[in-house]
Length: 78
Image 1: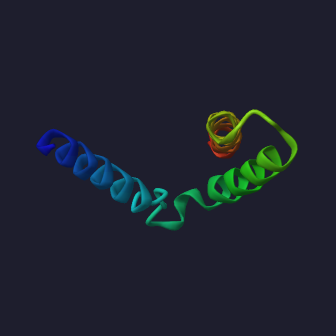
Image 2: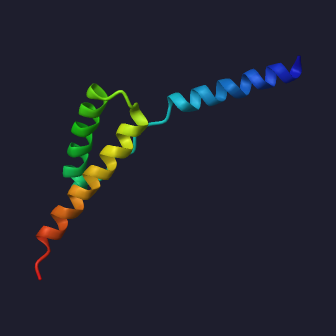
């Protein structure tokens, strides 16, 4: 009986912890374009694709990081 109570308590802790996890947010305005790109891409991907949230997050992260890097490279003065 005690083992079952401990198991239920641990599951409750995991569920509560999962509900309190927040998305990471940039603290400065340096990545404003990335944040906008990621938000738009994620919304479009989740609305139109049946791949799921994890696939969309990874895909949009890659796409927006590449765009941000390309933009930074364009702005470098040699």
